[in-house]
Length: 459
Image (cartoon, rainbow, N blue to C red; front, side, top):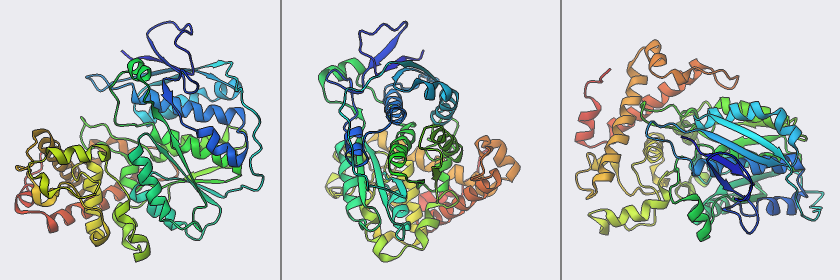
């Protein structure tokens, strides 16, 4: 049974049914949304009502995502009631928003908009000359860093980052500090997440959904707000093609569609309906490339900073994992990659395949040599590592060994409609990734992993 999520409401507001109420702003807010308006408006001037609504709706959706875990059947539903400033815009675009977020989160999303949100804030003038051409969604990961460097000849570019914990904020600042200000003139960092207040924790509960499948909606809403106010016509979100597609490796896995071409189409359409966003385009220049493809032609000045970026989905728990490993004395480095999550596995293999391992970060667990993980001293880590490696290999082998018709039948998510990428282009992209992945493992893996790599493939 899904929760009714009431965004921008006080707990005392009358809402029927079982609902989880929270405010995004004010002293009684259950959720902290940092200084997203202040930081942007200091430079750009006050955001129009519909743009403020966009940022609030995205922040509310993200937090609703955090506190709405799937049930035992991996099902969940979002019913979000939100007070807005410009209700006409959101009623007109309610269907587009519901469809876009249902696709992104793989869960039914239903918005109800209520008129009456008023901002008691003084007018802010901003800087009249603060104009931009490009806004880049910057996560601090390898692809987003390489994407920023790709635009080295562009001018008037700003980075926008979202973070929900201090470690990620520090990493983003560290990576952005190594990017020339000739490339990116400004870095906006916006906090959205659960506050530290005891009442907030008590009201919302301790359990968080770690997948954060709606995070790219928040990223693009923040980028869209900045683009509208600064006249930028392009928003870039860099993600290699296979990860952008987010095809689940097995039916039991839930993968994200953060930069899926269909979602980018939806989001671009939504921005075009907001006053001032009519001419903004959203692009992923890496849509047709694997991570190996992106790395192959990078020069040393760019590669020097690769080890500062983080791709790990377990970044916040790496130090805890170190303390639980049996040979912890050997694992006290400053690196921030666990080595066994799917993003770590893909990053490690891609860097090796491109011949750039000299520049990479270290990994807490070296899956190539430690497989089948008999010496980790943690059953949960060993199980997670084995499943991730084996599922990755089986997924890659189906793309390498099966007929195209069988692959499309096995992975129906290859069928989608977007001018950005066709199903056949998506298939060839995944096949190229599979060849790079499997050939690199075969070259660098230990004996046991090589044996399992060549085991018969079950249907």
